[in-house]
Image (cartoon, rainbow over all chains, first blue to last red; front, side, top):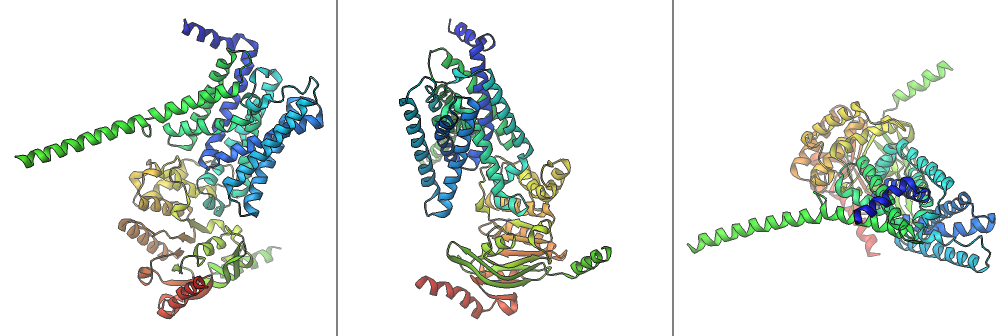
Length: 314
Length: 256
């Protein structure tokens, strides 16, 4: 019975027009943020990703105010500009004041997000039918995706992957050992800016599907899960992208079963489940195998002790 | 035009000072880290940079490569600015500056030394792989090529870094405390490699912490404490008086 229902939902991807685009949009996001998130995690910039995505929110409000339409490309452009701006503000705070990075990220994140909420609620209050629904960017509402949206998202994602593939070697050296990379002539500053730019694009892709609040988990969770299984950067990127993509498909399928359910939280719970499984069951680092190894070790220690005391008593 | 070119080339050939530092000052925020350093380092020598903590030893080698912003002064590598001479210099950073949990193996790290020669866009290939394998063998880690870097011992990690510098095939090595906290085998391996490099006429500049071994390992020493205290052959420079000046300066300043 249950399996039958799951199959019906699954095949809905191919037959149901809406679900197809929802699933596609979510998958595009999952794959992109999964791959890019590896760099965020390895550079220990997870919170930077969080600040970027929260900073995108006021961009949506301003884009709507200035353009007066809900054209998704325009809203995404506004979001991208503000996300970038948020990143620059964070860097400016840390480099010109004595405030440390974590505090600077906290400031950017909350101030921009606060501004965004104020803007969106203001637009809500002045009424009119057309601005309703801007708040869906908080948690994502993938069911609102239409064909042109999905095509746009696909183009943006393709752009990210082109950058990733072309500059893979450079991004790798800048992530592992930036000073050494710089000594060979690969400028850390520009490579960081490039990476920030593609992450901004990933954030923008995520606006429709997971929204700004939960976006950071799409960057962190797939990468953290992939790291459990994988021992080379390239494979980590690939597996992380696969995890992200799977969670996009499953998440959007589950959320499609209930009317009006936000897709973002469901996708995030799905990827977190994948992370949980990885943390427990990965052969090298998983809790389960670590526990088993420890128990075996303790057992052999106990055996040694008991044989030793046995000898003594004799 | 042609003539001009050949003249310039001739001049370059005459220029044999590997590292020439003129009036170099570096400041972090308002604090001077290096003050008015004038220093020429000779070719084919093993050179130690010695001084108390916070004396600017690491800053000095970073400044040579333009990794820290220079407030005043000039650095030349074989007579030209560093950005034109990158291929002649290999940098071995402090081991603690990178994340050894990074998902990669020893061979891959050594191969990174060849990225500079590859330049932008070109990918590592079977040749770079082979070269990296050779360099890894030179530091005695042939059998560790596929080992995750996080599973190597501290000394082995340090040797991987040295192998990466060897892969660059440079004229000058700038090393930041490669002997700090390593095991005896690693220390021995690194020193014998450096001896061989010296015989090939390479210049090795190393930040060094252990005063006990300076006269045993090195030909030349640079005594530093934000200012240049003294620099020259060990016998002339590595004296008790000079060391007192270098290390007392710090104490006086910390009392203030």
